[in-house]
Image (tube, rainbow, N blue to C red):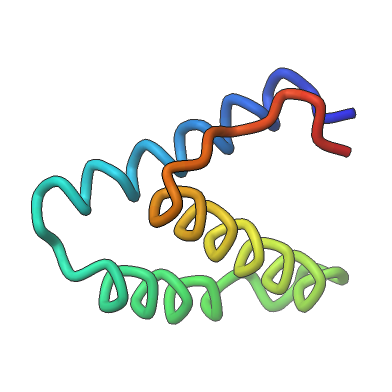
Amino acid sequence: MATDREIALEIALISVIKAAQKQEIDLKGLLDVAGDVLVSFPHEDPDREGRISAACTEISNAHAAVLTGARAKPNRT
């Protein structure tokens, strides 16, 4: 089950993407840049690749939630 913090972070990410959409910001461009920024994640982290991959997945899931109008699910595992 997701922690309260994980749920809050998911809601925050979806909210930021939704706000960008409402501001008519190019979401694909925004998410592409976010992916580029992720690559600068500290190289000394032993699980760098796993964390970057997981973060990319979360960004993609949040974007999909915005596009489909889905809401965060509090009981995610």
